[in-house]
Structures are given as structure tokens and as C-alpha cells.
Length: 250
Ligand SMILES: [Ca+2]
Ligand SMILES: [Ca+2]
Ligand SMILES: [Ca+2]
Ligand SMILES: [Ca+2]
Image (cartoon, rainbow, N blue to C red; front, side):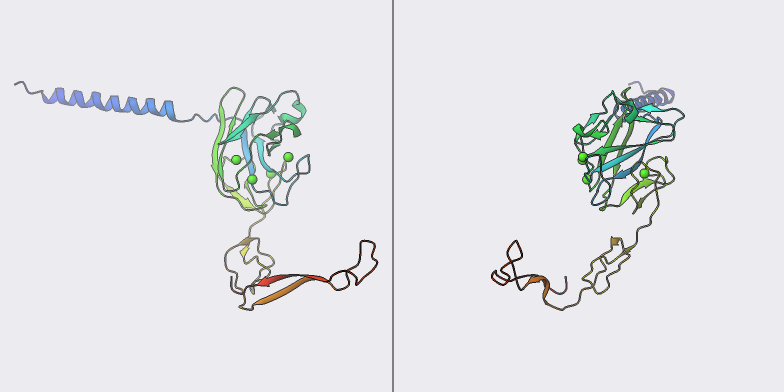
């Protein structure tokens, strides 16, 4: 039988390596999402609006702040924004509302209230994190990122403004919808007023609370001379009290 020469074996090995590289390159092209590095970037993500900021309908909603880091204004009409479950396209016809100036900021409310204006998106930002997506009017993906869990009224923002996502980003106690980001450091500690080591200035619960082993009832409100709606016949109505049960160590 003929044995392949050493040269022939080397040549076959080379062809095999080239084939593997080509396949890997093809796989990369087909299955890696292409991120178009454009002028529009995310500048702030606020997913858990407890008592912070109101939209045009006076509702506390999630928001995403965008920044234009390019030299010219951009109208976002035709851009798509959404999350892993869906989203919506920014409608045309209101360029005065949907255009970001060079260096400017624009706020998108993620509240599923499309009837409230062109900057409302048909998605909400999950408090425990999720993937969000932006696509420009050419079909290019401008961002496709996954953010982590957020706490109430604590926002995740770029410092300084306009940094690539998650590069020099940090949590801050000061949400700034539509304005330059502000750094307000978090302070960890016990945030429960019932704890013996309650820290009035703490903004993030760190699990350190210690409760006394006292057990009993705490009266929070009572009425001993209940009257009618006009303030008459006091004493003719039943008295009442509100209380909470203190269970001791929690
Ligand atoms: Ca939310
Ligand atoms: Ca709303
Ligand atoms: Ca969502
Ligand atoms: Ca901001």
C-alpha cells in the first residue's frame, strides 16, 4: 500500500486548519449581533421608580436616558426601542420632541403608555434587570445590553456623561432624567426605624439591623370619643384603636 508522504500530510493539515478557521469566521458573521457604533448611546437607566420622577401624566415610570455624542442633531423618529419582550418605534411628526441635539440628552419613558407621547415606549424596565435594545432607522443595532438588578429610586448612570455602557458607570442616589448625571454615593447600613442600630443616613439596607427581643403591641392611633361626620354626638359611636404587633427578633 502507498503511504502518504510527510509533505502530503502537512498539506492536508494546513487545508484542515484553514477550513476550521473559515467555518469559525462564517459562524461569527452569522451569529454575532452587529453593534453599530453610532452617535446615540445610553446615558442612564432607571428601572425602579418608587417616588422619584413624574412623566407628563404625573406617573412614576421607568426611564432610559439617551445622549448624542456626535457632532450633529439626530431625529429619533423611526428608531426602535424595547426589551426582551417587545417594544415600539418612535413615531414621526414631532421632530421638536424626538430630536437630540449634539451633546444633548433625551428621555424615553418605558411605561407602555404610547398614547402619552412620542417618547413613550411599549415596554417596561424590569426591576431585577433584563436586556434592552435600540435599533436605528437603517436597521442597525445601536445598543443591545443587559443591566442588572436595581433598587428603588437608585439609578445606574454614566460618569462622566456619554461613556460607553458599563464603562465608568455607577449607581447613584440622584436620578437625573433629562439632565447631566449627578453622583450621590450610596451609604449602606440598617434602614429599619424599629432596629436598635437604625442608621438615619443609610440609603441601602445591608442586613445589619438588630432588633430588641421586646414583644408586645404598639398603639399607633386611637379615638376615645368618636363623633358623627358633622362632629356631633361624640361618644355615641364606638371607640377604636390601631396597633402593630412587635414580634421581637426578626
Ligand atoms: Ca420597573
Ligand atoms: Ca406614563
Ligand atoms: Ca421589561
Ligand atoms: Ca441623567
